[in-house]
Length: 286
Length: 256
Ligand SMILES: Nc1ncnc2c1ncn2[C@@H]1O[C@H](COP(=O)(O)OP(=O)(O)OP(=O)(O)O)[C@@H](O)[C@H]1O
Ligand SMILES: [Mg+2]
Image (cartoon, rainbow over the protein chains, first blue to last red):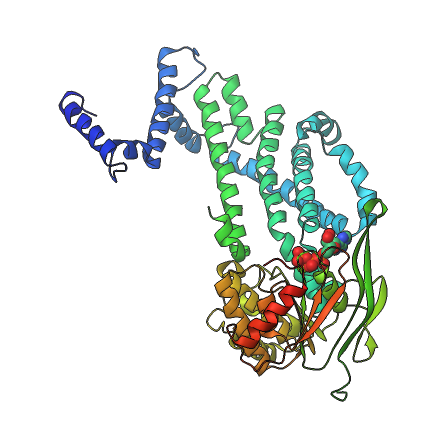
């Protein structure tokens, strides 16, 4: 990016470019390069962050990026309320896993049953439709009243939040199956049971998995909101502690670690899907 | 096995009216009577939207006719069954199964042990020329290859009657011509009673012992029957071929 010396040559370049319609290596092509744009974007983001911290426009409400890294490091070694960062991460993750397991083990079979049997559908659907539009956080007060401030109320929020996408995706996964695929099984002499085993489950599998994936990211939001309300452990607790101690580096550290784990767990599920549905490998790997 | 003069399939005065939601009626087929002799290759030729797929699905037992009956070896057809093999217009392969998994599905559903059904499947995979592609998934195959799998899958279940619903409708002209040759070859090696649906006159003449043409515009009705007395393998540029083609074209409202 030197200015004066290359000015002449860059003008010459531009002229040449007009003559030769498409140059394989030009400044424009370089500027359009994906990785270059990624680098620009990230640099600008961190520069802005650093600048905001430097000018103190947000007062003491923000910590510089490197301070956040130091905070993460310190939280890993020191303890807050008796637990290191690892302990708190595990506390959140543990809640998510329990809530997620409860919700999916009920919602997925129920969604499949609703799609396969219209009587089950007729019984469950009205209640489900009533509860469906309720944001999971709306349940927090109820959860605390019913289950107290300990683990069960947090797990309850996660169950409620992840139940809906799990059920909806399983239901739609079965309902949207191409009906002629069942005809294939019938023509080959298969029974109703064969239709469900050979077509129903495998064909709905990707949709069910998509439901699990959505549920997982919702679970992270749920656990965070539950922990923000009341907790003695978890990443949400660290964020709240940081706020109460006026330590923006702790707040941001908690956020960064949370984002990392939400991303990592989603990635695990994505790879699990690729492993379990090899037939989708081409289509889902973008 | 009955004597050779006894028809394999008899369709008697079939008509079909679909009742859609809101009691709207769609009259799709009117008074269709077809019979097919054992090991005969009969082509049903009709323009788009003339009820061809519906007729085939009725014979397959996937739909019930509004009036009329379908009999197979003298017994009335009341549902789908392994004695008929159906090749679908849009392939209908299971994307989660490999080529081998798709082809061996019929024998597998009938509880045939693994070793045996693998052998059967392999034989038909070879017959349709897909050896070395056993482990491929359908999305890794071209359209022509997909339909080969569809044909092998139907054959591997060892049906007495093969029903093919515009199997090459989605292929380009060149691949289509190639697949027609393959179909003739496969039929010569593995003789079956075949009902083949198409909207393509050349395809009909190239493959059929007999062609039954349907009139366009719903409801589909019988229009004419043509015997194709040409020696196999046929040539699309033969004089007799072209004459018959002209005759059918003149007689039908098919736009070419
Ligand atoms: N289950 C159904 N319910 C209502 N209408 C139907 C049903 N199945 C087919 N039809 C109607 O029957 C008509 C004929 O359909 P069919 O698929 O048999 O024609 P076709 O000759 O095979 O057409 P194509 O050449 O496009 O394959 C269509 O207009 C379709 O809307
Ligand atoms: Mg059709």
